[in-house]
Image: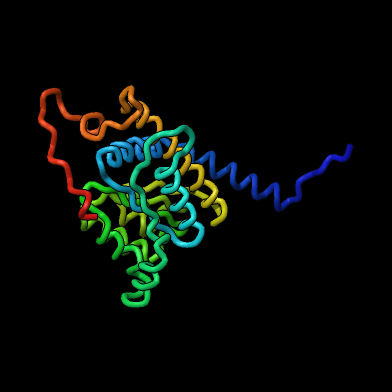
Length: 225
């Protein structure tokens, strides 16, 4: 039997990832809080907007797909949009207003106060994501950033940030995928806790944390989206 020894490049890649995961684990509890908060926002009729460039765009779309579809077990769909995926809007905005506006303009179009905007960036310095963060905060959205090593401009421009201490872009993206799955895990667990026995989400009572006897708030008109 021949024993195949990993090459130095393969072993080095794995070692780098293991080191990043070990350091990421110290702050990984934030993914649980984000997942629970997303369940409350989306379960109450809100929306997640997500954006990134290149590989981070793929990660953003991975997250929205898990929420609109499902992560593991069957559950109701929830509203989540990957902003780069609308190629007609993205290219039109880039052509008419410049690349820095491709996400910000969509945030102003689709976002409502109380929604969540998640921005993914390995560098934390992409100009179009910084513009999106500014637009999101101005519109009353909660802005969360999933980035590479701290400090970085996107971390500073967001309400909350989870920064991955990876030595390379590839490692940061790999840990971002772990974070995305952990968010989905926490999201599904929260949805399961708040669902009635019928299996349908409680849109008015289960997610808004009202005190007993308190009247339901006026429902937001989501048709404005």
